[in-house]
Every structure is written in C-alpha cells, then in structure tokens.
Length: 84
Image (cartoon, rainbow, N blue to C red; front, top):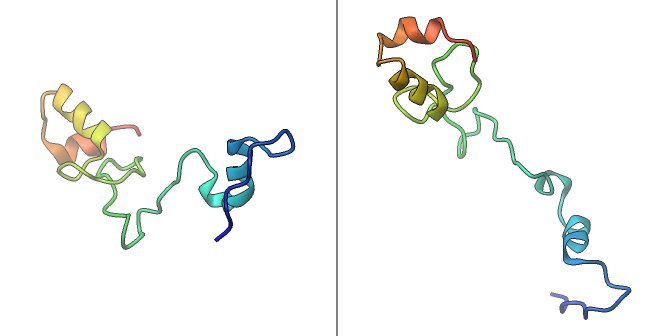
C-alpha cells in the first residue's frame, strides 16, 4: 500500500485525488440500486407509476406518507389511482 502523498502545491486537492482513484460508478453523488439486486434491492412500490423500493407495507416511504395523509383509504384502489 502506498503512503499518503505530502501536501504540496503540485499535489491535487483531496477531492481531485478521490476523483482520480475512484471508479466512475462510485464517484457519483447518488448510487442508484437496481430493485432486482438480490442484496440491496427489494419489492417495488405498489403505486403503479412508482419505481422506488417498497419499504413500508408495500409502499415507498413517500407514498406511505401520502397514503396516511389521505386518511388511509383502501390500499389497492388508492395505489391504482396515484400518479408517481
């Protein structure tokens, strides 16, 4: 393993050094997980137009909150009538 580079005027800033050393997929501000990934994925939100992971009773956290705010109506009908 190499030793850290001394801080000199010719040494890039830490963020520049990280950009050089990281693979492009890990240099993104957000890492998107494929819902079908066996480790990080999971079931899809029951709202038809939503592609987020279901984390609360079959809904993503945003749709779960909206469902509560709408007075907890019958879930299948509510989910079928929601835009993303």
